[in-house]
Image (cartoon, rainbow, N blue to C red; front, top):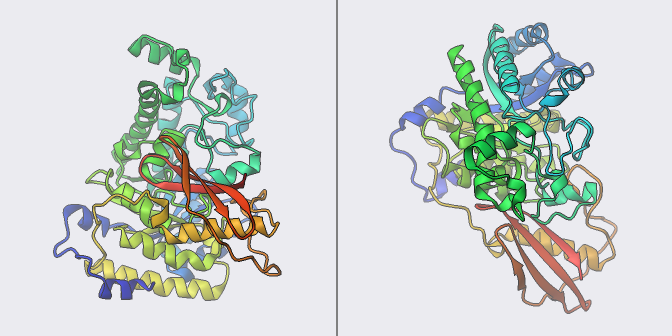
Length: 471
């Protein structure tokens, strides 16, 4: 749907006067992207593409102050505002080897007692630090102070300010041959560093490992969230003291970020925030950007401007970017961040994106963006026609003998244009299992005689994934 047509034809009530938060929102850039300065990246070309697409800000990670200064000069020529993309509890690749060698005691430990120094949690790059350690906190605060001292860096973006994913988005789990289905296995349950356990026991008088399932002990879960929040707010304080704005890129929606990685970003002293509502990671349709934004509107602080992070290069069609942005703006998002500009590979797509971005900046300047609806997303999967269409396409693939999963960035197989998928004659969906994290239905295709299990993931406030399996 074209957002201008949406705004003119819908019955949404637009704001008649901007609130303090919305006046503040207008001061920030509206269209952002992430970028890492790597040896194989032509930074001049990257910033040229940003300008062509109408982007006005970048969350940039560079290896040194000298690289930041060089990149800031390029960005200025292209009219791009630079925020430093700060990797916090997961050190960047340039710093990681030395830290592992010099400070192995700083790194995170799982429920089995395995440190990421020696244990691989999903990928080799997941070498997270323990947020409870004073030494870690001091190191990160000094890092932020050093970055904020670089001329031309307007603010910082906190990333990886979290624990390791206790579960993966369900499609990505297939890349690791995992069937987590909302359950947290000890080897992926992090936060059990001796310093974390000692601090928790001193405060609450017991060891969380004594519980049958520590991940359902709300006191222990809240404690882990609080350690991350304390780190985030120390970094916010350091940046604000330097006169810099602070944003962050947490997981997609409040319930998702709290459960999966122990982020309660709405308790962080942020100026703005870009939750990563990456539809392809969660195998969702563009409406996921709307639902995530609705959920985040209900928890964000009054002083925090809510943006929405959307994906352009994680396996889906980059043309869907416009639908994703429409969905986010309809729920009251004040801006968009792209992961990443590389997804806008064609000059034509960049031109079209610029037209879109310019039109939305005009609407924001006129105070005509939709107000936040103030409603929760619908967690009934059958109320989401886009998602159910994808579920039934997966059933068709299985009936046709085509697999639906593969080892890929989003764990899904694309449609095979050479296959004519069979028509379905589905029975009613029967709910067979439900808990605080998932709903499981059985359904039969009467045409083929085959039965299927359909699983929906719902972490508190939003449907964030689904799967189909033959039974």
